[in-house]
Image (spheres, rainbow, N blue to C red):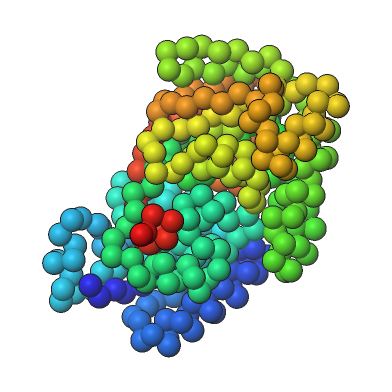
Length: 329
């Protein structure tokens, strides 16, 4: 099957890494005599405008695609940017009512989505995974509806209320993130603010509804609804999460005293935190979370602001075009 690759490039992703990785990908496309067209974002929101412009060109996926495109090219969108860039693209698909496959070259700070689905963060290896794939992979994502502000959309990685969202808000506003990104140490910027956030995040009450149960947590410290194991650039907050299964994982951590907080942090870094008595894990295809006391929120590493939440989650599917080397024999 012949391809025409449409490259949606966010050159500012990862404090400039997006542009550098795009140059490598374009060189590989030229060397391999591939057909492609590049498009560059210049400011936030350009991703959605570009998707709307390209919508009529892009090819939908079906079981007969290979036969349908023997003579005509399959037009595939390849996003080169961070998780936030990909988030904007799939949400524009959702807004326009489109069901299209998309591919991805991770070039952000955290790149947790790539980690979660088994896509290399090395641009050359990710390129090989994309060009060697014969079909897209169905990835479980989740749909959200937030009642207070009447928002809805799709989430690829996770939505966090509390600790992880405070880390995102603090990190994204910092100058150290840009410096660390220049040395390919973007994940370290999250770790840099982890301890500070642990010491400053206050507890808050939440209501959780799932699996026919209503659960109240009075001293919530962290509340993360996730599709993948990671947040914050590789921190495996939910190691049991799997984007190939059609359920959503919820992690709630209630705040203990200071010595216990430090113990939890050590366990988190050693990937032993699921054994901590303050760590609660749930899984369901539908989840509702209500947080009346305003808290920081984040969706796919993008700051949602400090606010109250009444948010419902349900499962959805997004096709990602790549070869998952973990499942190949």
